[in-house]
Image 1: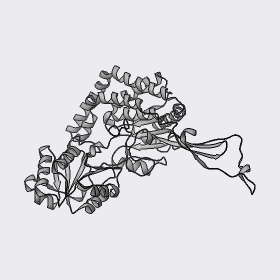
Image 2: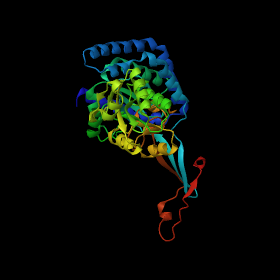
Image 3: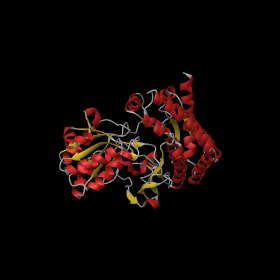
Image 4: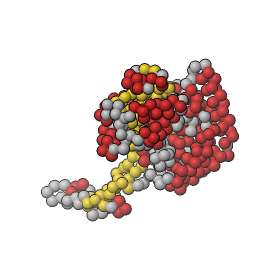
Length: 442
């Protein structure tokens, strides 16, 4: 066993032990630890930002050499997000405790009560991209929901991630959280080492490119949830209000293009007025967007000087000010394009028709589907979840932004008075009542 693998095993074992204690801790204790972390971030702000500045400087050098993509450098910067990080910790502390909620209660017989109760998943491993602000978001949600966490960030954010994880661990444990509830994994070998630890780790949430996610799925027995790409669409229906369509499309693409909920493909209905299409294309160009269009769109707006779009562009997650644009003949073709080329992340329609909007919402197979709203709303904080561990695009356990509820599962609890199965067996056995109870009677 290598040193890296051994370290990963030790971290997973410690996290398993800590998860039992954390899941049994009180709401007040977990909130106290969260607020202690927020205060520690304020105290050590300069130290944290200095580490981040070093990471950003190194990333700029790599970007200049063509060894790191510009969107990753932008994601790396923490200074402008620091106040939001602290606010996020405080917001999570204020959220209702997801643990111990009675979801269902049934009387099996007099004095024999079955309840289904929310509980933590246990030990979670999250592998995330270069955004260091994701680390406190993930850690805070896991702490609040009673889960231990193993974290692996991008190497370009190594200094920032290290100090963030250290501050979180020191402050939360000093405030009463169990030692070992949070660990930072720092090498690829660490990741490889944890993939076989299904006896300790309950869930892996990868936030990265297709290659990473597929590698993890193919090399572990541990359940995996998350998303690979954010190929999000804006569909402008033929009856869309031009001003509304322009506002939604520009915000979806330009408000912050280096994230997974930014639009990557714009679908414009052929029935939408040509002058409105040209206005929209002009607005995108004015915001610095490089457009790649299909033949009809390019012919409609030759002044935009668009590059021809290819099939690779329809499946691309650009993560910058690049947008693929296609003309479609109606709702059915738009939905078919989204379900064929999209990543089941977030898609929106702009329309004045309630009937068209509801058909779009029912037929688009994505974790978030919107009407007359920017795709950028698909976010744990904006959804009122406090923060998010990631956005799940699959259909198991959780879907969409994964907040506190997505980090819980449930257990069945049966409370009796000495009953035995033999009492309910045979021709003279007692009958079950199976009476649903209000959950407050559980």
